[in-house]
Amino acid sequence: MKYIHILPDSQPEYRDREHFLRDSIAFSFRDLLKALLVIAVSSAIGLLFFRAGFRDANIITVYNLGVLVTAIWTSGRIYSALAALLSVIVFNFLFTAPRFTLFAYDASYPVTFLIMLVSGVLTSSLAMRIKEQAKQAARKAYRTEVLLETSQKLQKAENADEILDYTGQQLHKLLDRPVFFYQMKAHGKTGDITFYPSDAAKEASLSQKEKAAANWVYKNNNHAGATTDTFPGAKNLYLAIRGKQGVLGVAGIVVEGYGAPDSFEKNLLLAILDECGLAMDKERFSREKQQAEMVARQESLRANLLRTISHDLRTPLTSISGNAGILMENGEILDAKKRHALYENIYDDSLWLVDLVENLLSVTRLENGTMEIKKAPELIEEVFHEAMQHLDRRAGEHHIETRIENDLMMAQMDVRLLIQVIVNIVNNAIKYTQQGSHITLSAKEAESQVEISISDDGPGINDEAKAHIFDMFYSGDNARGDGRRGLGLGLSLCKSIITAHGGRIWVEDNIPRGTVFRFTLHAVEVKSGE
Image 1 (cartoon, rainbow, N blue to C red):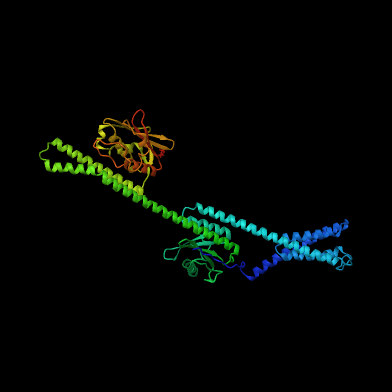
Image 2: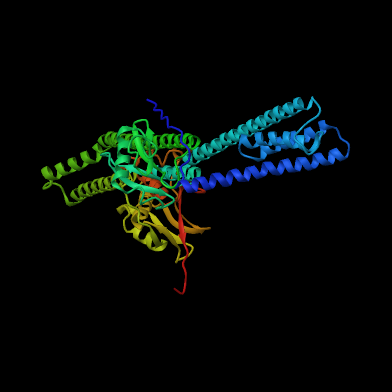
């Protein structure tokens, strides 16, 4: 439903009658002096023409030109009409026989005087009309400029506070008086107030009468306050900021001491407030859309997790329960070597489940935005050393080494999360490369970043898998020796963590054989002597 406000026109109010009369008289005398000056100059030019022997028609043209100049130079029709009348009188006095009297011997002069007066009045009327049209065109151009500037600023706003801030600045610029906004609370009472310029109208807006007027505007979706029939004793004019679902806020325009806005300003004021309401609606819809998309992503994540977990947890759970059942039923008749092998299988499966749960918790926290990342400068060498303490127990079957260009190399990171990234990538190399493979952790500085690489000399990853290896739930065709496959969460989690740190992660071939995972972090300069 579209609401239309019709605000009555009103003339600017002055602080007192004496101030009004003083401005009016000074204004009138100034224009009157302008008219008299133009007539005097026209008469002087007429006398020069008369002495030069020019005809009366030339002198009359000079006076008509003077009337036109008066119409352009002064602000009212009365001055140009007065100039036309004075032109006839002065022409009769100076240039018609007998000269220096108001009589005329020639019978045709009265007709000349009448034509001169009519042409002067018509000329001044046309000039005044052109001036008015020029003013209207300038007003329209100004209105278009203000509305366009407001629209451009509101499009740049990122939230409701910025929208109100831009709107307040534009209204203050347009009206050249203090304005303010009541942000309404859920129960329909006035909330926080924002002033433009800051605190300029606090005393005029915090009284109970002013708040009552603002509350009435919010509840009734109509204007109130000064210059209206509702709360006419208020010091300010209150207008609603409308959205599609109701009033979004209330704008206050200071009237006391400044006078009521004229009809042109009111039209611009309403247009800007409409733009503000549309922008706030758009921002709210965008926020609701983002929230809906987030909920949809979370629901999709939960569905994928449940579907994948229910399928992929069967193997380790079946193995654990089967091995435990064998030990319970036949533990006494099994020799120590076979019992130890069963214990190892149960232990490996339980560790796999622990790692899986850790990855699941980390992924869900990152997706929900609830994981708090605490970054601090850390030594790369210490991070590598700590990560080596948490590797898969089969790490001893491989040759793992570290290479760091500078022992004091540091990077900005959440050390707990970065250790999880390194452990995930190295454990993948342990799982999917042959026994005795070489795995190297290296770090080097590249401009303002630290580039960390984890390489192996295993079978490598095909190009098709590289394009999806960081996707959630993607596990490729790699199979472990125990026939169990991962959920495809580890590398996806690594990408989320590195991205949250402001870096990037990628995979490439290790020449001549194997795979290299690389990721970047922000480097920290080590300052000596501190």
